[in-house]
Length: 213
Image (cartoon, rainbow, N blue to C red; front, side, top):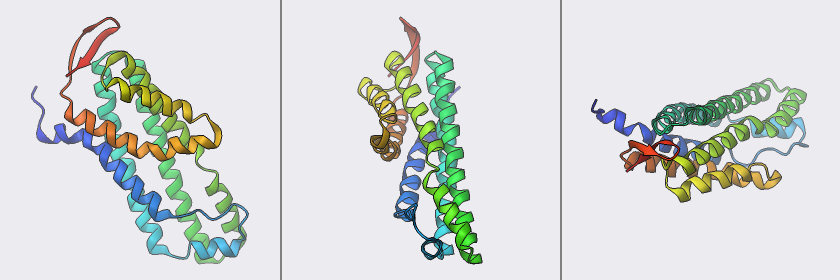
């Protein structure tokens, strides 16, 4: 069946994620230090308008990520090795939920600021500084599953497949893993454009069906 225009544009939802995630990251600015006082935290989160703009950006990013995850899973499944395709999709789900957790924390911090609850604001800020783990787990799974699959299947160019594996491994490198976190929207943008520009078809390969141009 011939795909419609909107279906052909679906891979670009990864680019939508990349743009809005980067915008949200920039708008959020420097996080308040974990040892900051409650008064300092309240001073940071007294701008309700900024917080809700951030929430909208995160919402669009998370929705874009899930639509892209559906496209990625479909392309990987076409080339075989379905369990790894599903694993990559699961990583996107975890990352999307992590964005929701981050947004939830922003709402809670704004509420604590409005109520003038310094102790609550201080406690929430500590949690907010340490809530990166779910996002890192999801991104690591997406990197490794996509890269591993594409090294075998050729759905993505070999250089991009190996780069994905490298970034996934980098996520385990302690503080250096933050580089992989920062690289995620750039990686998503590249993968999105590659999937959009590549017209895939399925042929037989040594490991089962393989996607080619």
